[in-house]
Length: 303
Image 1 (tube, one colour):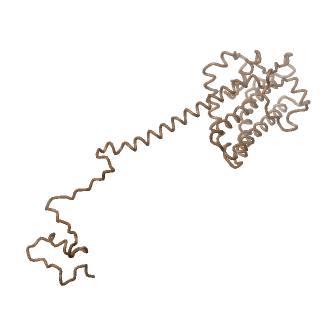
Image 2 (cartoon, one colour):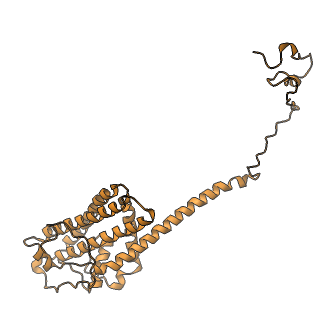
């Protein structure tokens, strides 16, 4: 196929002429008034055109990537600080609520569940607490059906504090069932149970926990670590469209049962038989009791 210049008007290279001088005549854009491309001298290279949008300094070209990395680091740092602030807030609320959790003593429990032995009574208490924590998880999951980002930390805090109150009550009553009530007043016993909740084991009566020791820096750090683990474990409970409600119910029931079995296994090794127990005074009740969800019928005992 011929180009734009008719064959009869094409230039013929004479013997000894440079091929580059005729390159413009054989291209597709040759002809009268067409632009020509000058040939490069021997040994020279074409100069790459400079893009004014790019910085001339190679170091400056790497600065946008560095800024993006710094932005990602700042976001991760800010997220970590936010999670730490939420964990500190929940820790303070759990410590504040611990003395307000109402606890039934052994005499009350035996009257409400007549004819049951220690292990059977413990089974009833664990089943009731597991169902109550499941109710809390389902309620928070239902509240997060259409998630509002600013409300998610508050919903997470409400769930953890609610479940913590249920589990603290369960731990205290398991100590009553196995005859291992910690000494001290209401606050000292409450923080002893809080230590047991944090360490996931029964209270060691050979090492009495005073109020000052219970609120020490190490105990608060361990409590904050436990709450942080709960926070990340409970994040699926906030899934939208009622998925979080089902997930929260299952996970809370499983976690409460797992904790209760650890505490009961530890207490059972040191249990004191009921007939060998000394007469203990009734438990002091809080002036402003914390209202926790009631377990289903048949698990809370007769009114």
